[in-house]
Length: 158
Image 1 (tube, rainbow, N blue to C red):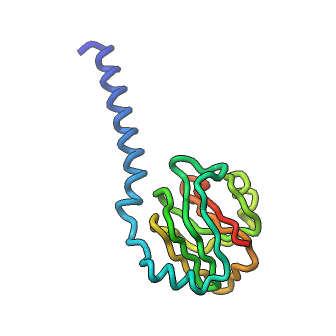
Image 2 (image 1 turned 135 degrees about the horizontal axis):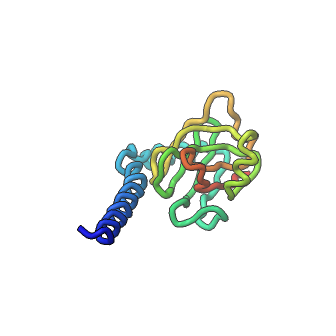
């Protein structure tokens, strides 16, 4: 085998391994995600919610792979979402005292935020508010990818 052909084959195989790895990272959360909460469960939280907000796709650091859309319902015991999130690994829901829409702002304010819980579903979610956390002390909810430090979406509710 000629050295040029060997280099070409090696390069194309490495590129395909990289593409497969990236596809696996993207697909794994979709394949392993639990079922989304029922519309009745989301509606029950919505009925008792003190605040309502909207996730929008057009936020500054949202892009084709990192976005959210739909209604968010913030209650004293739970936060629910009726809509969709871009699939990804290790999503966390935060309450923030300020609205943010960039990774830089998130990192700057992270110490003043409270992590509510994990978001494991992408067609709506339901996350219980931890004891001792009062959502009315905050004004925004944020979905953040902890593994990759990526801003997904946010909504201001007051």
